[in-house]
Length: 384
Image (cartoon, rainbow, N blue to C red; front, side, top):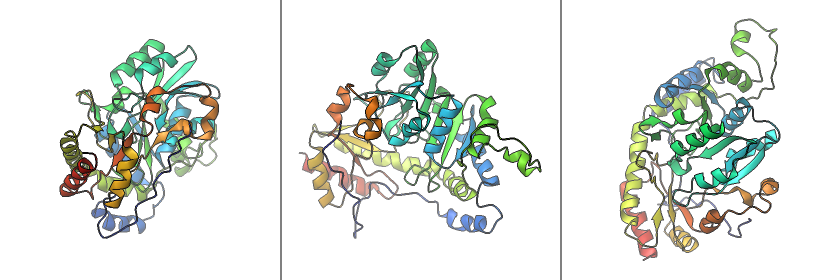
């Protein structure tokens, strides 16, 4: 399905604007980056190792962690380690950033798109059940906006049908289920540190996985298939036995992330405060629904605040006149020609229903509580 709606361009900077996204850079990074720039290592070096250890301890205690150049790199690496091959059948979310599904095109896998759950815009578990066949190898799912999918139900399907679970947590850093890290509930979990995520290295990513036996292979594939430890230890004649990629993180990126992780609680506390103001004010409006977790055992990490309204385009135009930047951010993947062969004669009624109704409003550290009240009250006035 190809939408006729034209996306709005970025809002021009004016005296007072309310940006949809804004990268968070710790003040300490200005000084610490100078130290890295003066060092021997600006590419992949010891700081990447340090970041992996800190991240593992904070978000993935029971898993192994390998830092890479982007969330997309992490996804491709996950698919390789999961042994997804050409024509293998995988179930994927229809509604997501294309980065979730494009690496499957590198491999030549057979994509089976699943519709959305209208309560969260996450993948529909009920639709997934209908898509599973004896040929299904994995379920790939995204935690949209910071709200985790129903991890309990997904694990029931995994165990019943002997499937792999690959979790795209690019938007859900720090989310939990039953007070445990979401990394506990998937075979592979990827994170993104792209410019506008909770924490950023400009661009970057990380793959977390349960099977510790895959660690050496993950590290080799991240670096051309070369065993860097042996190479740096003086063993230059070691063979390359698998196709690798240039997917490493750099020490420059790792330094930014290590600095920002120290302020992670401050970042997430502020985002929750802004989200809660939106929810409090906008919940009074019968013309608006706010997407949030519907299961109290699942925690929202508040990367996006998405509202649903029948007057989405009208609202967006009015907000733009107030210098409030909004957009739809992610789109259904069947609007893109590269996925055409996977959607022939397929229907996605829930996505059709929400196609022109969802809108993301500003949620970042540049939005103050005063701004949040102004934005939410403005929305209520427009849609009264």
